[in-house]
Length: 304
Image 1 (cartoon, rainbow, N blue to C red):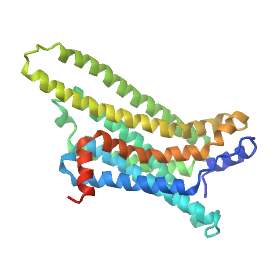
Image 2: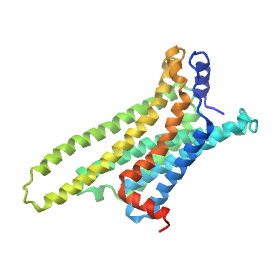
Image 3: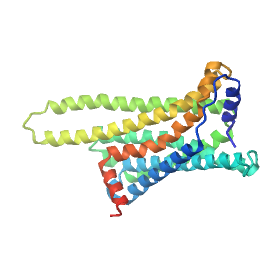
Image 4: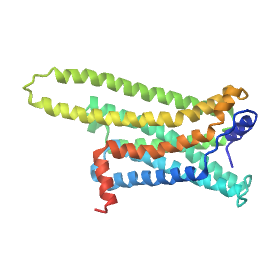
């Protein structure tokens, strides 16, 4: 009931002097359930509040939906592992193996979807700040729906291919390269936005002090940059939570028998725990940084 790369990891760790770190099932299960509830709240909040029916929140809703599916599939997979260990399921049964492949496909789809969603949000923020007058002509809701449809379709196809051919080193290399190239592209977008932001801030500061539009423009600018900073924090969280897992895959290919590499791989379950925590941390950042979303959460929880 485990993917081929996990079986390879177990074999390598058994040949090392470093003991394999085990994470208790209740911790996995608790994180999965809590993150599932949190991301469902975000999806429902964005659907219910008409003030949140904008392109950026549509992409955030898509990101939360990917996190919801990831939490659900990982929680169910952990539950299956516990049932198999207690003798209620066959680890090598055909139906169990197929179900495990489906859950692995969903996890891969959610990861690729998270990357694409972050890229779409970064592009949306760029257009919002630096092409504000043309924003509504560029980011129409029809185009947003087309982008979301393309993201979900592409992610579904990529997930099936990744799981079906994951034993191939070429597919694993593509998976790792996709992660690091995506990080580089998104980092470039954010760095470029902050460089342009400094230039625009100086232009605003150079305006005459008696200018009536200076104060409103400065307030708008601060609000826009607050949104960019929030998304930067979200992206940083993604990197911190997912990078150890991809370093694990990279080490698995580069030095499968090196004792130092095997010691790092002994932390595999911690890497999985960190990966699952990403879906738990994101909603907390939304609630802390986004006022409108926070107000919507409060109304939903108070049933008002």
